[in-house]
Length: 500
Ligand code: NAD
Image (cartoon, rainbow, N blue to C red; front, side):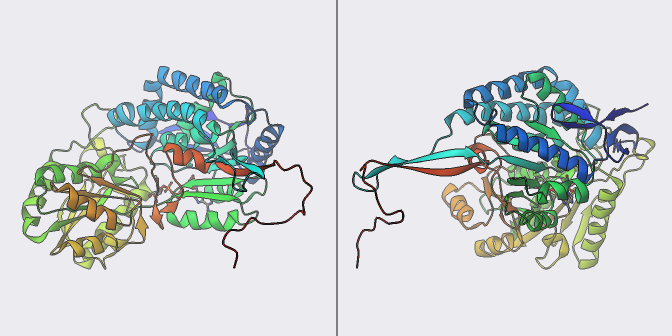
């Protein structure tokens, strides 16, 4: 009998008011891993009311940041002590390889918790200053926003959840979070650690259930002060509309369509390696994944040959196997979506030169496997160039001039991440400054650190994850003015310089 998970609200586990549970499937073999509560609007409201009450009491927001940090640090210690368990569960529910889950995703989670445990302690306003010539003093204070709701996707279920949990709690907010329905297990297990760490009840709440029901309540409810989403651009647009009910703050990390530009003097082998790792890491189900490569015309045959040679070395198989590089896609639906784009790419005239088919063999029969696909002859007008595929598809295009490479790179509605590869660093920086993406890596594609921001331009959203910038997203600025004249004044007036 698979394990059953309920809703975590106010430090207690509640059965969903629907009475229903839905299965979570292992995408490598279609086996049921667990049954998870199908939350309803009522359940979401209950969690929001709890988070509201707890925030308004002020016990959490009123704690010294160091106290909150201590709990986050303890949470990181508890998480580290169970890191292998979480890695395995994440790998089982997403199909990501055990080695990436254990050696990359999970350690980044505890690094994030520790970063924000400390960062909360150095949060400060910009100025304590006198702008009035001795009449008074201004103070700037950063305060928590209040009740934050977070909605997270399936590609890095716990890691992206922690990108929101850690800064939101470090800043003194209370939180209601909803995982994607197909990958809720690690977040639900994480809730047990939050409880064990000793966070006050109701500071952290998890409601599982359908996006259109639970998610839309989290975005629209008027008792919520801020809604943060990582997800599809169309979901982001819905969240903005729903959030307008009470003009809550919105923070959106959305889709991507990352280009990788190879300059003429680049180390071609390194750029090919960067393209392959960047494109097929997490089976391409990554918002920063390399999806489009732009390479000088004359270098394209050589570059493409190197890419194909590298991709041929990938071992596709059971994600639990230490030797596996590529596991299954997240679901049958996602595989069909990617296959459809591969078909569209061929119809549009791109050349499918490698992969894009379901691997044969008994071990692949019940999983959602797909071999990495490589296209050449990518053109800007093609759907495979413009739309987010979110799967193992890498497309290679060419350019004659650097301006053309930049224009092609910027030709999409997305603006999350990009990279430039070349030996002349000044040239790389010039290109980087013209790219309309929130991140530009030079001679690298995909590295993230807790200290630096991650977030999009254009329709990839706004607001940052990671870094002090992210912590600031979860605060609001208050100006406190202290009068030092002791004189009674008219209530409204301005101090103006350079009067006409
Ligand atoms: P999705 O938008 O379908 O779902 C994300 C979350 O939103 C899920 O929890 C889902 O249940 C919820 N949701 C769906 N419809 C909703 C609605 N109408 N109202 C409220 N909530 C709703 O995205 P996904 O398929 O889970 O994830 C893939 C997408 O996420 C891709 O577009 C990818 O680029 C993006 N992503 C972005 C980043 C980033 O940092 N920018 C990181 C990872 C993933």
